[in-house]
Length: 126
Image (cartoon, rainbow, N blue to C red; front, side):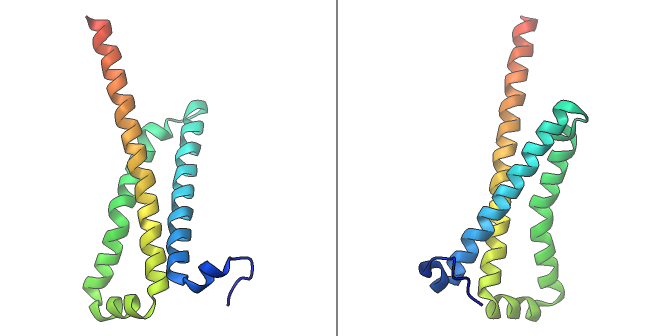
């Protein structure tokens, strides 16, 4: 089933389309969750500082472990799924990479904030 609203170029390239949509959707969702956690942390709980880093690490490590576990349990089924469903495989891989990119950027942001706070603290002590 093809969507007539999608340009013909992407309709002819299902793997490219799935990759772009998977990456973009996952990236936007992850950034939205990070923004929401920062906004909620300003008003109520410290979700951004305590909960989000743990969730991000779990997702970054957990998703590949799910796929690796499945391939360890049923290697033929995993191989068959990748070979017979290349569009879904590309979309899933791109979705993981989109989320991982957003998480990596958030870790970098947190590291920068921590270094700034450390520098301010050492300046006060001097």
